[in-house]
Length: 251
Image 1 (cartoon, rainbow, N blue to C red):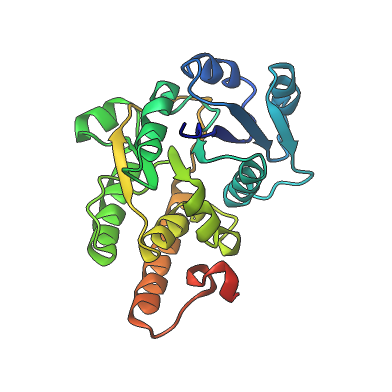
Image 2 (image 1 turned 180 degrees about the horizontal axis):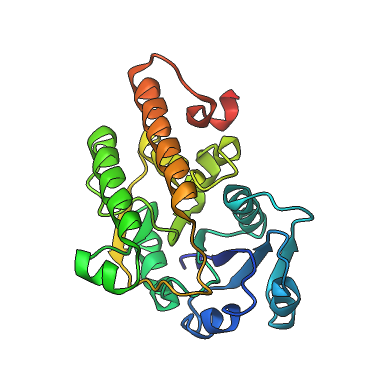
């Protein structure tokens, strides 16, 4: 009899008290074996609420940033025996009903990593509230990344993702930035180590309580993404291998 694969949802949380209950309510019953919430030193009562709701909660004593939060999420999920890890933001921006689908393609060994693509069409993305400057940055960076990584993904910048145990055990994500560019570093690492990346469409909502970064932070993120592309090219060509592209055993 084939061993059941353990699916763990991880939630990198920062001031998500107002949206956590709605997010949890929309996760299909039975689609995950455990939910781990990592609170990145929120100023509200996210952690206390999560504990009352029965989640496994980890609280950072100080704010480590979005990438730093993810590092804790993945480390703890693997320690808890996850075979598949789904990252779902607790801010209700992404549709939680997608969980069984995004994890299913990994369960069936079709993909190693899955992304939920918010940009099925330009009109849908804008109608969902995505600011125009974010849409333009997203399209430009995705175009550049596809060219240099040799992939054909619809969107690299979604925060809704799923990873196989093997991918997380192989990729040296601990060497990545603690900031938002972590998301791009881990995808470029996945491409470098030849993991199979797939995607499915997901509606996304932008509203007051959903997390979002401003124009300045978006610009810094964009520049950091382009720098990571350069690091990827240098590593692939053998000119210079940054620590983010070194195997865990070679560090």
